[in-house]
Length: 105
Image (cartoon, rainbow, N blue to C red):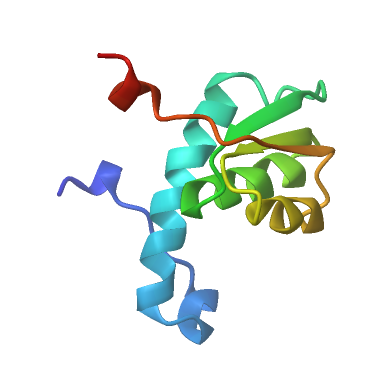
């Protein structure tokens, strides 16, 4: 790997097992990029929609909230609604939306 694509992990990570660092970096970069590319660091507060509250969705919620934005989460799982609301969201929309890819044929 070329060094410009590597990220140096700070020394403070000594207290965090390496097995926990990689998923945070992976999900973090995956969710950070669209937030930055859509102007979420430009100062104006936005309402951010996060679709799916799994690993990536949870990271997206955390990042958007830490930037000071209001987050609306969308999930197909009624069970995740309380999890979403515990994360100080403005709203969580849960609806058993059918998988459009499977039903579009």
